Length: 205
Image (tube, rainbow, N blue to C red; front, side, top):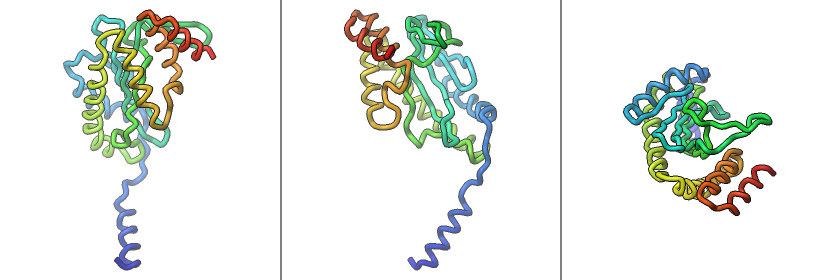
């Protein structure tokens, strides 16, 4: 290919690039929520906040699914678990999250896949066009993860899987503040006192 043809192709591709059009989080919530609600319909999830869903089956382990916003003008799926028996620190007081509305991520799995990012900088139509495929893939991945955990003992293995998953770059296991305290309480729950003290010491440090 000649240089002139190459330059011409670059200019054509630039013209094809989606225009910059920032979408507010409120608009993104309005567009994505119905798609997620349709994907989880009949699965027992409650939408407890904008783009945050919780499923509770009577056990102390709640399943969570969400679409947080990230730097760079994108939203990406997140799934994980909230434990009724694990506290969190809010300011100075220690508090509990034992309802669907107060549930928070004690174990967090971020998608870490650019194919599951939804851009907020190319207008509403781009969100509409990409959301269905992203949501379908994310819910399938989340379901696969949740199927790993059917008991408190399974949570320990899930944390170890997550440790390996987060070792591949980006935010590490302990960059998520709640991981240490949650794992400490899970280990205490199954009788591993040494492991529990070790994780709690890491959290307090």
